[in-house]
Length: 360
Length: 277
View (tube, rainbow over the protein chains, first blue to last red):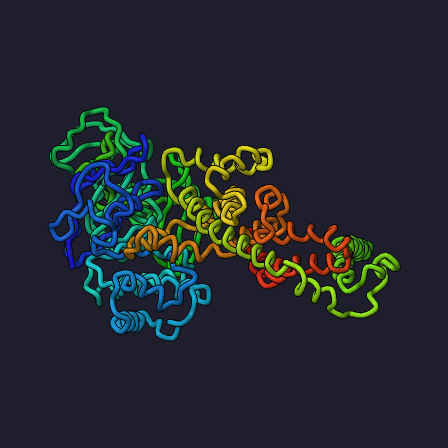
């Protein structure tokens, strides 16, 4: 298995810069997820690694050997596509063995490898079928099988689960995680679904406009986002933001005033802020509680409630905020039109400076 | 209730229309086939009656005393080779235009499209001069070249549309699997457009098989005649034996009809592909 290193990778289509100077490392056996809003360049970055697009600038290394000048097949990686990209006129076995056939392996060894992969993916009964006779989940497994058969150094996944229904997606998510453990392989996975990112990744790379916003373990990104974008992107529903202003400095922190509620003292070291600076104060929906909070309380009117039994989502509007989302575990008897108080604690909230960077 | 009766009426109208169209199209063919079994006297005496007997005398005359078998072979050679060359070159051209981005790709496809709008018969004199210089006048090879060139625009036009509709992820996937560009085209992409190739093949084979104009200009020796051209020799040579002529025409139409019936499923599949997705 292998590690991947991207050094100053850039990609331009005509005048449009899609990837801007991205450098990152994927360790051996690591499951790395590229995540970001659509159009952020995550799929392009994956295609650059696969060799399906040429680099404009930079270098890509696998196992410390430069590979960006090599043809896709020579890079020793396998890719699973969003649409599965199965060859419709081949059977499952022919689909899975195609790469080996191209590489002129002998028939017996192809057959053995295809059967081994089919065994892992429970596809043995379907080897003689054409893709059109398979369900979505089975097709996806064939696509994965096609990758496994080649025994690649690196697996690349381009939104492989987005064509599946919700239930199957959860099942395949777990299967992929298992597969990662069984194969002990380096995997790079692109998705726009942050639940997939949070549940599967060893490391998440958050991308925006072709640039890396933050790289880290899923919970590190959740607990300590580097900037307002990552804070808003990771976590579902998204973090609530309140506009605020720096009022002054105290020992070990700064005083801020929000457009509503009492002024707060936010603990930080060397914030680089000055008095009068506009800041954003962020609290995740799940970190609000009903009633008085430890450090602050806001008031709002409920305009929508989602009671799922195990959890409850409240949508409020307050004097300064059109939409505030509160997520609570358990069932709560709140009705539309109710006026409620919601509280938060400073320890579970975040502050972002005028440049969007996190203040700590 | 009113609506239902209306729908029934519309269906009836539709059926009447379809049946009458079918009769208009099929009756001359039926007449041709039936007249092939008649003698000259029968044809002139009772042109619309059924033949007195279904004997194969006229066909025997064609087979034994005329050059029609030779013409049949010539027409088959010209049509089959033209369509094969046409499909190979047409597929390659359409593949390049539809699957690769290169400078001037639009110009190239417009160049092919322009061929659809030019009546080739207008260029007959320069064409003759050109073929003469190449020594291809009175040569089946010359006809094959003309037919291939003539049919390329429509073939490229039909195939480009189909090839454009194939997902590029298939190509990418084959590239990652290590297949060369030629292999991707031959093994992955082209098998997926066979319905379109059947359409392009039949669409062009029929006019090539039936063509009268180009053999008339370019073929001089009787051994090199094609079927459509060869049948004219029945005028005069046998003081116009219409029975034999109709039998010859039936024979000429038979291969095309057979090919169409055999491939009709694919032909229709191709015609309606992309309609439902």
